[in-house]
Length: 232
Image (cartoon, one colour):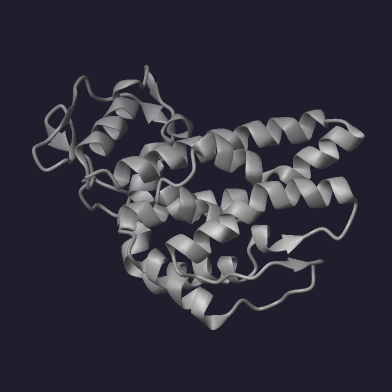
């Protein structure tokens, strides 16, 4: 979406969870109906449109952007996006550990062992953990089980899942969020164990912190979209 003046007065959610402006249904960039899978998500998207002032600010509408992505892109590219998620899982953040110093090793274990354990138990996906940065392919059984979990996500959930995955560097953390096995704040914290360790050691960089705040805002919006999309 490009910036433009607000051209509507009323925003409503229709009976089939589409968004209407002055009674006219909104279209996505490729002219598909902007229709959501759950009422609560439709109302959250509608609230973004209602909150606009004299100018429509696309940057303030992350839920709308994700809805457009789900409708316009995910449906036509599912095999590619599912494969990308499995590729992330095959080199997942939580599976590669530092060899030293001992305090970082301990921090990573405390944050990431529960993620790998959850995948083994909840997904029947036996991911293995390794020390160092050299790539170690995951067992085929782990990737098959994880792929099945990704395939079970609908287009809307997958759009948000993909954003969470790329922002955290972890497909496993993203799947924990999708399954409501971890809260967004905790997911963000454990995804940044390495970064926080370096900041504590060397001090915080203002530019880096500004970028992190922007990423966190996008992450939290994506988590909200993901959980609302999966509401019954």
